[in-house]
Image (tube, rainbow, N blue to C red; front, top):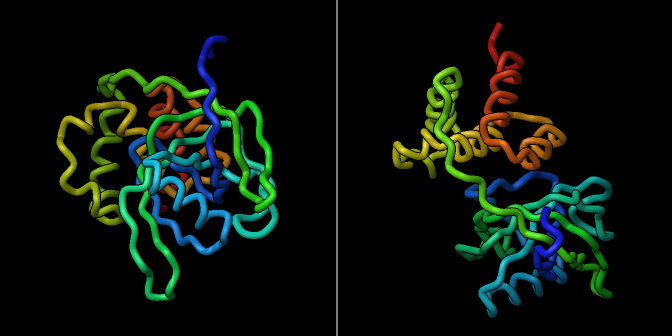
Length: 200
């Protein structure tokens, strides 16, 4: 990361899952610190950061977040049947946390450096099978992507991020794939993981 990269002050939401650029995340909001955060984001149009929890829990005492996370922009609100606030957030750019602090209400805030968006890279022919695998996963698990434009399947970044969020990976694997900066390397690692999920 370049030394002159500007640093942003961002509220962080440590979670037990990884949000990828372009991904969607449904959240149930009930703790006062996060209700306040959502209100602030809605009022100012700002984003919050989603980081994988390294130590701790989603609720209760502040958790230790991973150093690399993803911007989340709220795209929808709804009242859930259990009376809690539900939000739908969309993943944006990735960032690296350089410093964190905990507010008196328990909300973690971080100074973060934004990562550039990955350049569009065509899926190599030797990894094209992953496109068919993603199509099957989307049909069964992710109806929101069923009408995705065909050209997205040719984008190594989009293909890799969607596979990483839909395959039943361990959280440390999800985090490693988030942190990779070469979209073709990400696809190659996913290809190598796939035999684990094949039926005997």
